[in-house]
Length: 101
Image (cartoon, rainbow, N blue to C red; front, side, top):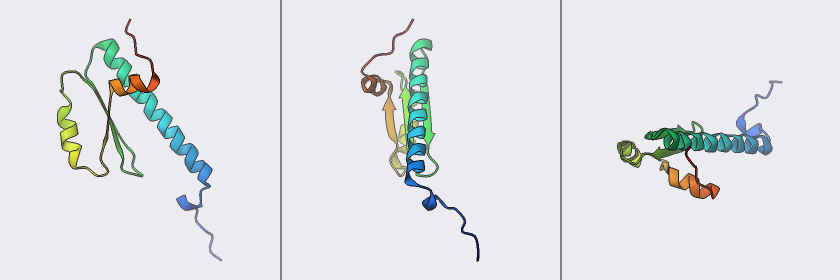
């Protein structure tokens, strides 16, 4: 009798859920750090994250000058539609603003 190879569908749903939660936490913390860097160093920052499994793209654009605007226009025809996150979105999610020293 041949051994059954484990596939993603054989994983318990709790493990998949934990992995998705971990990915979400890491993505959120990376976005927050990029936003903080943008504010503290007065820099234009753009971070793009693409999940290989789903193909979903998340873009943080923390620039006042519009330097990274071409990126979002190029990804406009991409499927699934990229989620554009701005530094203001991160501030409103937390309910607090990032202060600079």
